[in-house]
Length: 165
Image (cartoon, rainbow, N blue to C red; front, side, top):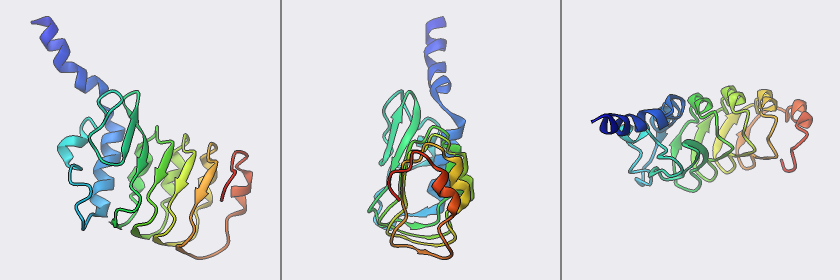
């Protein structure tokens, strides 16, 4: 009986509420006209990573946490949720080649482990947030083919690991 109780508690131990909030809000901010993300349902967000695997398309897990989101070329519409900042273990984010609009949320500065940011070929607008410099591990930023206004923030030049912009 004790073993059974312990086994049923394991999913709660592995679940990360930050990843759950991240995925829940991201799914609400996106429209998926081609039903590419058909398994992105709230009941799957409570424990998006089962150790190192996930059944959520585009999400890759490591040590029970989402560390890569690759949702490129899925004809997604909508905006980038500021709650992506809750995926604190995220190292790569690729939302390229979709139809996303609106600004890049300054909240992404909380993704301190982020190394790759690809938001290219969307309809993003506004200014490139200088707060991205808080993502000290960024080595690739790809923002081409969007509708940004204003200059590229000089602060991005302080990212010592940045190899491609």
